[in-house]
Image (cartoon, rainbow, N blue to C red; front, side):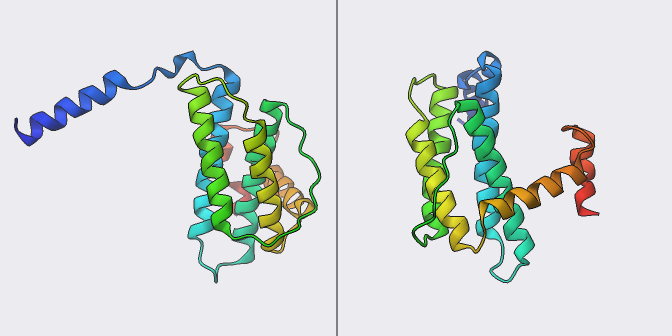
Length: 169
């Protein structure tokens, strides 16, 4: 088999075996959005230079808070107030976020029935410890994110305003 034939065979196999996403409920679709969003924001935080502006770090943490808040609403989990008690590294947050995102995939795409409550609350506790370690509070992140979103969107999300990024001007 030539390389091109193998590539074509593989491509067709991937398309044939891919899960059909049309079966997703709106909540599962939104939960996948949270998993992807948490992952990308965490990567942006991790890849940011230690010398980058504090605003960049605050924005990435604020965006993670947005996705965690949305996930809590979808999962009907109250976000408990947690007094941060330990200094943690970002690697612990990466570990907890990866676990939660992986469970979201299993729950939404593979249809594996499972409770996401404990892994979510574990991630929430680690997130709280991380923002404390980074020098922020939940109130600071909520306030800056509200300001950013109010600048970006006149009322609610639109693809056009999302692309314009009025908060960056």
